[in-house]
Length: 319
Image 1: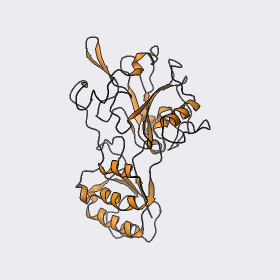
Image 2: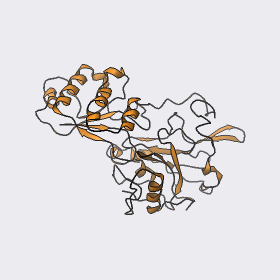
Image 3: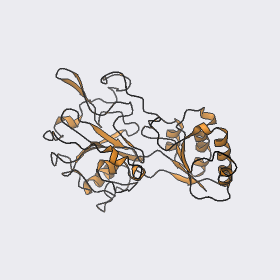
Image 4: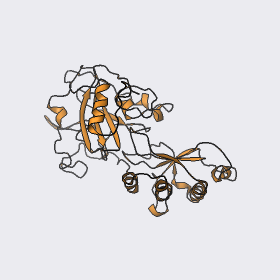
């Protein structure tokens, strides 16, 4: 029995469905014919961006189906869990394209998600040789980011917290936990092993949909506020892909660097945006700088920025 998961969301549950016997047989044949399309769930060679990250194929249980039978008839059995769609291949012949055009439509996947996945996986580019981004460049578009400074730099940050250091990406990237905690868990600096933690659920008032009002209401219920609560407390940025998903960033250090991190769904913690720029303060010359933060960074497809939110402690509960 094979389960297919469209890996596309950061906070909300990804769509999942079971392949029919016919689909399982064809998937098996396609994978055997082009095994190079198979990728591990996580690999340093593929810097997966926000949004569509391919399909995860998972063997739920062995039976007498085509996939299980094929494992005993080959010297190189396929893994019980793997990713397709992220490795370069011709679109028309890819397993991911076939899944989109067959079983994804059979289970009634939303057109917006099919459209997003049809564009292929966006891999985050390697860091630029430039020492800092330039407003107006294609990777840092001034029109899309009209305020490079953003509201956070107009007095909302906690300027007194010069010793804040909460860069604990390795804690969340532990192999036993990386797949069990989402972007909100990382934002809360709390590891409850709740893969789909949602704003407000811990407080008993979970966000009921992915809208500005509901996500903000959930954050308020969990104790997040609009102004600095403590120099050593948490600072996060929030955005939504309207009607689909939410995503969070957490301030990890301040002082000279002001580094931010984020964790997309079950993937490892990242420190860069969708253009490959580390989300931090860049010194551009004597007394001048460019400050990239969650409001001004490339965060496609999370187009609506909700604001910055604060807790008085260095950890907040979530579930």
